[in-house]
Image 1 (cartoon, rainbow, N blue to C red):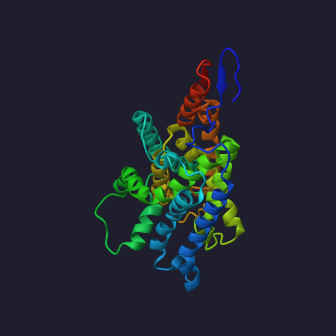
Image 2: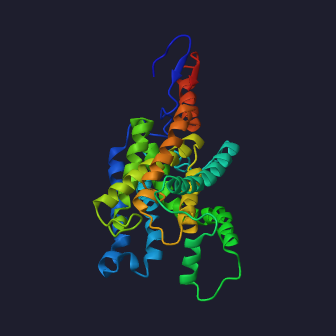
Length: 339
């Protein structure tokens, strides 16, 4: 740090105090990525060996278990590989303490409803520009789905069923958070802070790209986009980079991983919104109108631009507080402001 008279200014993403590394722990990063990827392929291996792919009856168990592989990789790296080991592991990962509690709570609420709204707006925008046919009155596609999968008539108006599905998204978000925590502790809890010495944007982009590529064992089976190819992997990677920027902002802005955990859970809970409002007989290309498809990239890009324009990515209270604390101890006679 260099002193400037009469005051000094540090960027708010300056890692200090031993909580966050001053340099990227590349050995730990490489081991983390190798473990997360290797474990994900190991967990998904039965889908490949059986020849059933996503039709394997154990897929509903394998997919959630796979979400915990970044958490396992994190624990191994933090306790065995990373040198020096973080002094306060829970704080490094954004698990604890939750302070200031008000900011963490409000950003968690914002993440919950904001992530669900991303999916809803994406679907409505796709319908508005003619990329998919929607039925927002009779909900004919959802009615046809129910008729095909339910042996008896449901004595509840279809509109009430749709409204119920929407109202239960927050509950589904909290339930899904039990799985998304496995990913978020890894990607936004450990990897993002560990890459922060590169700068905010390189860290956000790189961590998002790694997150997207980690999904390859399922994407190459046709999951999410229906493209069992490198095209599917590329689509997933781009989608994760865009959504990862928003989840990363929640992590940095709150100093906690929990807003990102809940937002991730909410996004997954709302992912089926299109099935509620699609018109009967309409065809939807998930690569275009899916929750992580091309229309979603546009919606997320707009949100990112708004956050940029309002200076939200420069506000990283946890890191700024650490920077101020160290500077005040190293040069108490020189005031410092964090921006």
